[in-house]
Structure formats: structure tokens, C-alpha cells
Amino acid sequence: MLNVAIVGTGNISHNHIQGYLQFGQRCRIVALVDIYPDKAQEKKTRYGLTDARVYESHEQMLASEPHLDIVDVCTPPYVHAQISIDALNAGCHVLCEKPMAASLEECDAMIAAQQANGKTLSVIAQNRFTDAFWRLKAVIDSGLAGKICHAQVDSFWWRGHCYYDLWWRGTWEKEGGGCTLNHAVHHIDAIQWMLGFPTEVVAMMTNVAHDNAEVEDLSTAIFKYPNGALTQLTASVVHHGEDQKIIIQGDKARISAPWQAVACVSADNGFPQATQDTQREAQLNAVFQETPQLRWTLHTGQIHDLLQSIENGAAPLVDGQQGKRSLELITAIYKSAMTRAVVSLPIHRDDPFYRTGGTNALAPRFYEKSASVANFNEVGAIPLGKDLDRGI
Image (cartoon, rainbow, N blue to C red; front, side):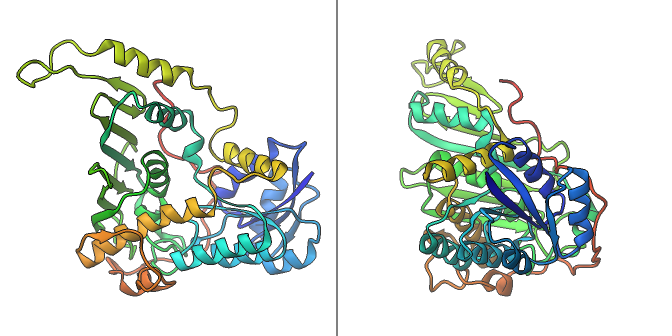
């Protein structure tokens, strides 16, 4: 039985707590930590965690829980690294919410602590644990779509003006960025998982609807890959309807999440024929449909993956290196938007955007942070966007 501590008991902690409770024979929540202890106490009562002890700091918790196995970090991003490193040094495995850390320097420090202590470090990327993305990757890996030429990634979310009134949101120092970092991270992780790591990034960003936040609420980026392929990615919290999608264009077919397969056939003059390559479309549909559905999805799926990796001594699907790769792409987007230049990857240690505080020091303040609400009313588990599995 693995003992779990949840550090940070805001809205996202619902998704984590509910996930662990699915595996009552394998783990139990023994500690809840929050700088507002009443929030931790509320989760204890709501979920019937009668054996869980409440703490005001992760340091106090680590000193008081000698038999702890997993520390689950659900705090604002600016303290992810310190809590994770302290937990790893205390001999605990760590599951850390996205984004992994506030800088690539902190990512490397977390990875070094994981390697030094021989523990598991996993970073939340729950969209990998959806049937839509799981099956789409299987189809890409089949090669039936041909050479990948282009991807369109619409990370469309919508958040009301007051979203950025929460005390830590909307600042470069504490949130680390806007929609690119804290919303599109899911789709950025998914596309680099599916297509690999690009070599160049160019981007622009703006704030068009949230004049109570320093950070961007809209950005657009283009990734270029070694084979010449391009990905265009839009990150947003201004899109009503949150119509999220990934569309992959191969030289033989178009595939996407939500799922659709289209394979054109060329006429003698190069224009598409009225009839399509139905045989290839049938093959693509077969791979998609025959890829087994996941038993556990989203946060619960990733928690299952973490438990399985600990039990079997294997690496998790989303380890520290994978978490860093997503943040490196995000850092490249910010660097390009701020410097108005094409950014080459990887980002090196002597780059100011690599270092902790570097992006914060160089970032524009679109607006002054105009409100600082200590706590919002609970909404339960955070909605994670449109159901990407629709249309299966």
C-alpha cells in the first residue's frame, strides 16, 4: 500500500484525489497540505479521508510523515521545483502538475534530484491518457498517413475576466506565463509526443481580453522539424466553445482528434478527384478502432501509470525529461515572441531564458495585475476542455 500526500488543495486537487480513490487497494491518501489549512480540511471532509493529516507546509509534512511514498504536487507553478526536490530528497516519488517548473534550470534540478535519489518523477500530461490522442498516435506510428507534412493544433480555451483575479494567476513571477504555459501545455506535450522535437520556433503573443493580467491570453507559434514539416499552434483563453483539435496532414492522408480520416486521390492535372482513397481510409479507420481503449483516462490514467511504474520499477510514460521538453517548447515560444526572432532548439544553459527568473525579467507586462483574490469558491474537479473522444 503506497502512502500519498497531496500538496496544494485547490481546484485541480479534486482531479488527483478522485484518481487515487479509484485505486484503494494500491494506495491511500495520508496527508493534505495547503497554506490555507481550511482548504485541506474541506477536501478531507468532502472525500472522507479520515486518516489524512492536514499540514500548512510541505516541510512540516515531510518531517512528520516518515512512511510516505508519493508526494503529489498541485500548487501554483512557481513552487513546483522546490517542493518536488525536497520530496525526492526525502526519498519520495513525485507526481507534479503541469507545467513542470518555472524554468528549464529548475527542470534540470528536479531531474538531477530524481536521478540522485533513484525515485520516480512524473509530470502531469493527462491528454496523453485519452483514447483520442492514444489512438491518433497509434495511427501516426502505423505510417499509413505517409510522411508528416503539417499539423494544426488548436488549444482553444475560454476563461472569464475574473479568472485572473486569483492571487497567483496572471503574473509572470508566480504563474510563469499565460495560456501558452498553463493551457496549451497539454497540446504542446501531445504534439511533441506524436511528432517529435522541432528544431526551430517562431511566435507572437498578445493580451486581447484580460486587462487584469500581466500575461498573454492569446499566442500563435510555428514549429519547424528536421524533415521540413511545420506545426502551427494557437494557444488561447479567448475562444468561446473551446473547440480544441489536432489535425495531422500526411502526404497520403489527413487524420485528426476528434477522429477523422481523409485520403485524397490526384487527378492527372494534380487536382483532387471527386472520389477518395477509400481503401486507405478504411485502413486508417481500422487502426484507430482496433487500438484498445484505455481502462483509465486523464488524471486517473496518469495516476495508474505512476503506480504501475513504482510497482514494476519501470519509467513512467511522462517522466522528467518529457516534462522538460514541453516547457522547452513553451520557453522557445516566449523567447521568440519577446525577441521577435526565430529560436533554434535546444535552449542552452547560457541562454537567459533558460535560467530561473529569466523569462520573468524579460517578459512584457501587457496590463497591471489589478486584483488579488485569496481564494475562489470551489468548483469541484476542473473542466479539462472539450471531450476529445467525441466522434469515436
